Length: 357
Ligand code: NAD
Image (cartoon, rainbow, N blue to C red; front, top):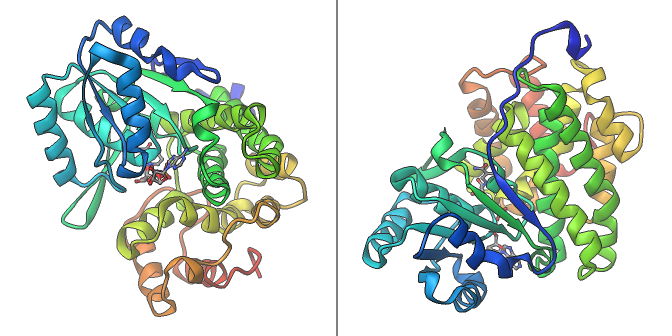
């Protein structure tokens, strides 16, 4: 059915986005624009050098640096960071990094309502959403709150150019997953669909160029543009089977975030393809081929993505429990959630078979 024969609602967040190689050097001006004077700069330990360079760049407006951001946003780390916020009297946060660092900035904003500037260095897309996932007592709980939505995003291709190629590929598939599932979201709208298709197109065009030449700032810029669009889709509409499976595999079996998305995506999309062929047709159009799941599998294979859950820490003995967990709580999905089919999907993803084989 066309969009214009039914009612739709479109919510867009008021986010300021600046884009361009070297735009990170404008952070000081952006802090000032927010009316802030004391920024706390956040990173992971691996990106501490970048955070320190930011502090130097920002000068007197940098109140401190906290470099202990970590995967899955543990509440204990957030509490440490909040102590730091109080100690230095920070009035805004600047997160430089991937989804883990952005997550810490969001966790601080959720508790303090401090404004956030995010400088993303992966394609995870968290900077464009009001969603926060945090972990306490080994349980990851996700919430949605406007307070969590970052106010300013600076996309600087020079920073993402240091992302190693294997992480580049898995992170790109993580972004594409937001767009692909956004196509069939119950609350989709013409804008979210257009963003999803254009976001996927940007990755289909630019990722092969980045793999050939990781320092190509034009290609890196186009992939960052794709990440922005795909992240915006994630922020605007609900996700389904694919994100649920990845959440289960990441949360209960400690599998790495982006790699899990990369491996599961072709299988989850193939699972849903027969239920919503028209809505998923753009996936095959963008990535080439007749079937959307197979098109994504071919794209992942030719990009050198990991294909087997067996290779990223999943134990074959745990597949049954994973299938049980994935069907435990009811959630909306375009195709019915059937335990046997889910178990078959997980088997195929475990062994790296093409979807549906
Ligand atoms: P990440 O942030 O954990 O980064 C992985 C590693 O790569 C880190 O050590 C990081 O420092 C390093 N790194 C990042 N960019 C780099 C670069 N350009 N050069 C060199 N090293 C770099 O990984 P991620 O996949 O971006 O984020 C995953 C986390 O984000 C998960 O916890 C996930 O749940 C969350 N996430 C949340 C949302 C949301 O909307 N809330 C969306 C997507 C992902």
